[in-house]
Image (tube, rainbow, N blue to C red; front, side, top):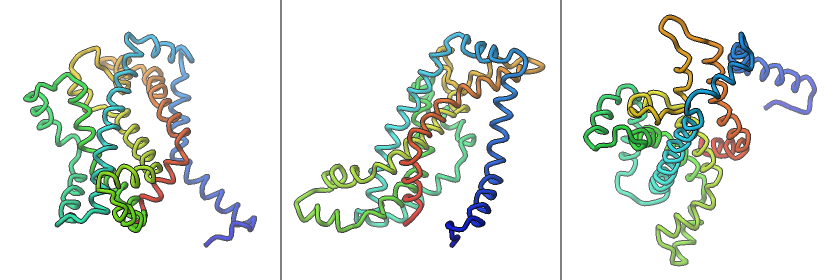
Length: 262
C-alpha cells in the first residue's frame, strides 16, 4: 500500500492521476473549443433556436424516467431474489440472464422493430423505453446483486422471525438499505437512456418525438456539416448529465464500489 503521508508518494500519485485523466479531458476541451469557432456563442444560440428545442428535452426526459422506473423495480426485485431467496437453479437463471449482455443493440434492431410494429407500439415512447430497459437490466442486476450480497443475511432472518414475509422484507429491509446502489442505477440508466441515439432514430417516426441526441442532425448538410454547431448541440446535450453526476457523485461512487464487491 502507498504511504500517502509522504510528500513524494502524494506527488507521484498526483502525477499518475493527472496523466490518467488527460485522454478524457482533451476531447472535452477540444469539443467545447471547436463549438465556439466561427460564430462563437452564436452557435449555441442557433441550437437553442431549433424548432421544438425544448420538446426534444421533454421527450428525452420521458424516455429516461420511464426506463429508470422499469429498470429500478425489475432490478431490485430480481437482485433480491438471486441474492437472498432460496430458488431452485437460480444460478442457472442468473447466468442465462448474464448471457444477454453479449447481445449488441444493433443486432436486435430488426426483431425489435418487427415486434413494435406487431404490438402497435411503433411511434410511441414505449417502443424505445422497453428495449432500453431490456438491454440494461442484465447489467444492473449484476451490479445490484453484488451490493445486496454485502447485506448480512441475519437482518433478513431476524425480519422473518418477527413474522415478515418476502414482500415485507423487500420493502422494509432491502429498499431502505439499498439507497447507494439505487442512486448508482439511476445515474447509469439516466446516462444510457439520455444518450440513446439508434433506438429513438428508428422507432420514433413522428417529427414531434425527437430526442436531444438528434439535435446535431439539424446542422448536417449533404456534402459537409456545420461542425461548430454540431458540437454546440453535443455540449448542450451533455449538460444535464454532468449536473446529475455532480449532484449524485458520492452516492454513485459508494454504490458502484459496494456493488463490485461480493
